[in-house]
Length: 287
Image (cartoon, rainbow, N blue to C red; front, side):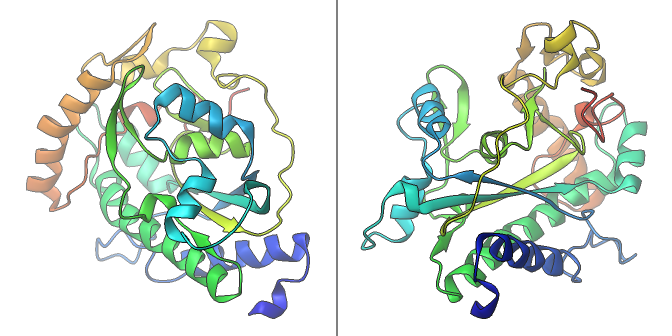
C-alpha cells in the first residue's frame, strides 16, 4: 500500500482510488432490496490544514468549533506537528438520478429513496470516513475523520444558532467544492443534492486555488437577484429572502419528516431535503 505514496500526484490518485473502490463496494447501498447504490461516483478537493478560513469560521461560529489542527490533536495528543504539515481531504457523494427524480415529485415529506440515502447512505459515509482515515494511517500518514471523533457534537452558536464543532459543508467550501445558497446548502459543480465527508491527514497535498471569491458566488439569488426556487420548495416557509430559518426547519424535520420516514420506511436520521431538488442547482452549478 505504502508503495503508492511517493509524490503529491500519486498520493491523490491513491487516496481517490481508496474512496472510489469503497464506493463501488456493496456497502454503498440504499438497503431497499434492489442492490441500488446510495451514491453516485465521488468527487474530490483538498485544503491546506493552515488555510486561514478555518480560523475565520471558528471565530464566526464560536470557540467550540475545531480547526483541522485541533481535530488532529484530539486524535493524536502526543504527536508534535505544525498546522502547515496537515491537509484536508474532502469528497462529494452525489445523489443518484433515481433518488433525485423521486424526491423532485415529493412536496411535503421526503421520498423513500431520499430517506434511505440519508439513513443508510450516511451510515456508509461514516464508514467511508473511517475507512479512508484508517488506510492513510496504516500507510504511515496519521489521519482522522473529525466528524467521527467522540467529541463531535452540536452546540449553540451565538451568531448562527445550532452549529456543529466540525462542518463538512464549510470544509468543502474552503476546499473549493462550492458556495452556499439561500437555503444554506452548498452548491457544487454537481449540484446541491449531495453529501460530504472529510479527513484531516498529516501529509503534503497541494490545494489548488478556489474557483470563487465570495461564499455565495454560485447562488443565482445572491449573484443575480433571480431564482429563489428553493423558497417555493420548502413546505414550511423556512427559506425566505433573508435566508434560512434554522429553528423552523429543524422543528419540521424533527416533528414531521423524521416520524414519517420512521413509520413508513423504517429509517431514522432527520431527512427532508425538498429544497435540494427540482431547483436550478439540483445537479450542477448554474453559474
